Every structure is written in C-alpha cells, then in structure tokens.
Image (cartoon, rainbow, N blue to C red; front, side, top):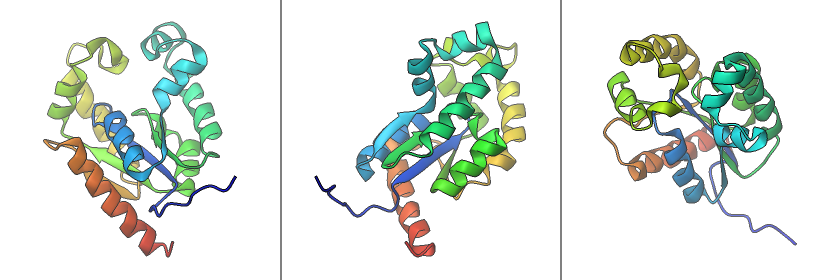
Length: 184
C-alpha cells in the first residue's frame, strides 16, 4: 500500500535543549502539526529497560544512562516520520550529535535558568541532576557548559513565557525556511 505523501518541511526532526525547556510537550504538538510520530527518548529508554530514569541514575549511575541514550539514538536515527525529543544531556555525546545533525534538522529549545527551575520543580523527583542544595546554580552551571553544544543545532527557539502552540508555529516556520535553504 502506498504511503500518502503530505507536504512537510522534514520527516525527521530532533528537539534538544536543557531539561525543562519543553521538549516533550512541544515535541508532541510538533509531531501532530507535521503528521509525524513522536518519541520522547527518556520514555523510550524507560519502556525498553522497565526502569524509570531517576532509578537508572540512582542504581546504575549517569554513565550507564548515557550509554543507554547513545544506543537508543543509534537505533532511532534510522527511523522516518519522527519527531525525537532528546534528554537534556543526549546532544552532548559527539557521536549522537553527529548522527542527529546529519539526519535532519535539530531544533534547540531555550529558556532562562529561572524558567527551567520553575518548570523542573513541578516534578522534583524526576530531575536527578537537580537533587542538589542549590538547583538554580546547578542549572546555570550545566546550561553554561552545554550551551555551546546546543548552539550547533540548525534552529533555535525560545520557550520563555510562550504557549506551546506559539512555539510549535515558530518551529514549523523555521523548518520550512531551513528546508528551502537546503533546496528540499
């Protein structure tokens, strides 16, 4: 049976950015807007392992989790018709970064450290990297370290003080511009 081809700016889109910038919520809506499947990498890993991300960190450690991320990216980068929402640290891995940048547009979502903290504190037990005395300082430190890597993304969008629909609309517009610039 032939697949119905729908005009869309990309058939594989990656969302990256720090925790709490809205990758999962925005990714779901972006996938809907582009008529693509959606995978949240953290949920994907949880389903594959049967272990929650906080428990993976707690019992197996961050290094084991990063290996799982890398393996999952290797597996998913071969898929089509997908919006892939990464964990905040996934894009730091050079191999994953290269594979994703070569696969399709990578969109970096941004928010201020204060916004990130406010969003992250809605689910405090789910953010293992923020289980510290001063989470805002931890966010600033990690964000500063990761920002140069996030800047390698093809497209950049701020989520501060914006509705999901607004952000998705901006991403779609930028994806079309990106596709046109690449001659797609």
